[in-house]
View 1 (cartoon, rainbow, N blue to C red):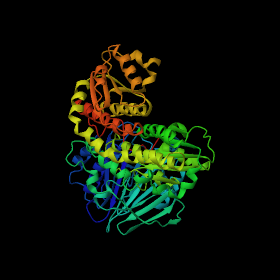
View 2 (view 1 turned 135 degrees about the vertical axis):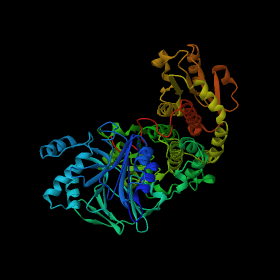
View 3 (view 1 turned 120 degrees about the vertical axis):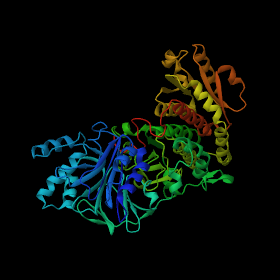
View 4 (view 1 turned 45 degrees about the vertical axis):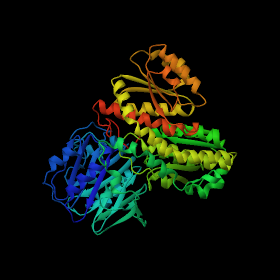
Length: 608
C-alpha cells in the first residue's frame, strides 16, 4: 500500500528518486521521504511528493538513495511517521511496504535494550533490530539484515542503505512486490515497474523470501540463508507514454477513453470467429484438465470481485459450469471445501492483491488447480498460478479501476467461450458471441462520444448526499460496481442492489433527495426493471435510466436517460459500466476532488 523506489549509479540520485515517487504516488500519498548517500538525515514531508521535492531543493548530492511514498497503516500521517526510518546511530536507513505483525513484541524487547523510537510505525522496529544484530555480528550489515528478517512476522517489500557503505542498496521481499531495474552502470528498485520505465525496460522480479544486494557494478539475488539464485531478466512490455496523462486532466478519464483499444488488446488474436472459438495460449497446457472440472471458484477483491460475479453468470449460462464468487479476504479465512474437480480462478489487476494471493496459495496447498486473470505481467499471481490469461490493458494509474475492470469482463467472456465450446455450446452460438465481441470497441466509442450528455446529467445530480444503483441478472454486479465508483471518487454514499431486493429493505430509503440509477437495457429482465423503476417513482424518487438505444418507452419511467448500443445480454456489462465510470468521474470533478487519488485509498492492496 506504499511505494518504494531506490537508485544506485553515477548520477545524482535525488532528482531520479523524486521523479520515481511521482510515478508511484498512486500507491500512497499521505506523506513521503527521501534519503541519499552522504546525507546526515532524511528529508520527509506530510502530503504529496511535491512537498518533499520542495524541501529537498538542491541539497542532496549523493549518487545512491532510497525513497518512499506512504499510505498509512500503523501511525497516522505525520512527518515523524514518514519513511525513510533510521536507527539510533542514524546510519541505517530503510523504506518499507507491508506490515510487521510482531512489531509490538520486537519494540518492547528493543526498548529494554535502550533503543529509542522516533515514530509510531511498525516499520521502524526493523532498523533498530538490524542495529541490535550488528552489535552482535561485528558490524556486518548484510548479515544483520538477513538475521533480522528471519525474526519478522508479516509482509514486506524493503530497501536498505548504510551510511558507511553508500553505494550499496539492499532489498528483500515477503508478500509485497519488489522489482529490480537493470540499467547501464546503474540499478533501480521499486514496488512496481512503472517508475523504472523512465530508465530501462529490463527488470528482475523478486520472489517471497529473496534478498538482493545491488551496487552500480551489478546485483546478486539469494535466499535469506545466502543460497545464490540465478534469474533471467524480463522485458517490460509497456512504453513510457502509457504511464503519462497524454494531455488529459486525470488518468481516470484517459483510461476510460482508452477502453475501445483495451477491448481490442484483450481479444486480439484470441477469437477464431468462423469456428466460434477462443484461443487462449495461457490455458493451452491445462486445456484437458479444464475440460474435466465440475466447479469453478472465482476469487477477487473490490472491482475484480464484481467482474467475477459477471463471469459467474456467463460461465453458468453458456459454459454450463457451476461457479461461485468469493471475496479474497473472506475466503482465505474459511475452510475451503475443494476437490480435484474444482479449479480456483483469481482476478487481480496488479497480480499482487494480498487476500487474493493468500486464497490462491491455500488452494494450492489443497492440490487444487489455480488460474489467474491478471493485468501485470511478471506479478506474483501471474507466476504462482498454474495457468492464466493476461488482460493486456496496459498500466492503470488511476486508483479507481476503469479500463482494467472492462478488460477483466472481456477476458471472462473469452474464458466462457473457451470452456463453453469444450462442453455443450454450439458452434453457431460461439460464432455469435465472437462476432459480437468484435463489435464492442465501436459500441464503447459511441458511448464515449456522448460523454457531454453524461457530464450534464452528472452535474444535475452531483449534489446528492446518497445514491442507489440497481440492476438485474448480468447488470446487478454492474450496479454494485457503479456504486463503488461513485463512492471511491466522489465520497457520496452509494449503494448497489439487485433490483429484485428493493422490497426487502432499500425501498424504505427512497425519497425526493435519494436518486436512483437504474440499469435497464432491453434484455430478458427488462419488464422487471421497469416495474422496479415505477416502485421508486411512486415514492417520489428520481430515476436515471441506462437504456438501449431506440428505447423510447423508457422515458415514461425515468427522469433522465443515458443510452447505450444494443449487444448480447451476456456482453451488456461491457457497455453498461462505461457510462457509470464517466458519471462517477464527472460528479467527482464537479465536487472538486482529485479523482486519481481518492482519500484513504491506494491502487494496489498488498497488505490486509
